[in-house]
Length: 321
Image 1 (cartoon, rainbow, N blue to C red):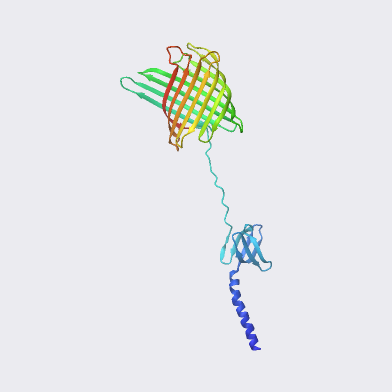
Image 2 (cartoon, rainbow, N blue to C red; image 1 turned 90 degrees about the vertical axis):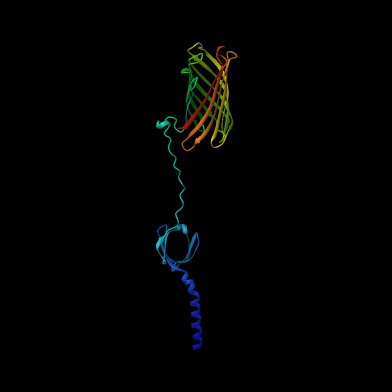
């Protein structure tokens, strides 16, 4: 009898020894759920997404971590919360207040050109050129504004002085390379057969290429030019055929070229405007660039003693405004 009791005692002792590691793994913990309920149970096992608990009344249960607000175990007196979800990084963009904070040309690409030149010796020359360009584009329209002033002296005598301002607007069509346009220009030149000239035109255009690095369009339409003052005061209806391209050669070099042909509808006379600019970014952070430009206007209506070509060469520093 005593032998049987001893065997039973040894069996219980071995069973207790075997169960001791399992009991030690389960630690009583206080779990607060996101709905406000609180559970006190032993943590049997855990994964990255769930906790397996042994509750004295509810038994074994598995709770997703997403439902747990905080957890306090017997070995950790401070509550632990699930790691906070990473918030998306918010990039702050400075608001555009327009040109010099005036609200004009808000959200336009603006550039100011300034160039000075001259020579000294047996003869002296001085040259000044100032330009302002502004461009805006949306899904519905594309607008370009240009203004330029040019003055040159030779041996302290005025040899050239001109000014122009122009505006062109394209009305774009979604999912189509075709667009409509209208534009106008005002010129002042002290060395022409006229003092002032205005011209306007409208028509249709086509986008041959429009990518992040290359822009190439063509335009065709009808219009007129009107001259005032001087020996030539005429109203001339004319056609219009032109191309315009902008090419980003790389991160620092940009080329802009345009050529527009204006044939008279009254006779065989015509005008042709050509412009070529090469822009080299010197400091992208502050928006300073070097600009080399050449423009020419050929006018077949000038008198015999006047050169029909009017070339202008400029070297300027350009600032993004």
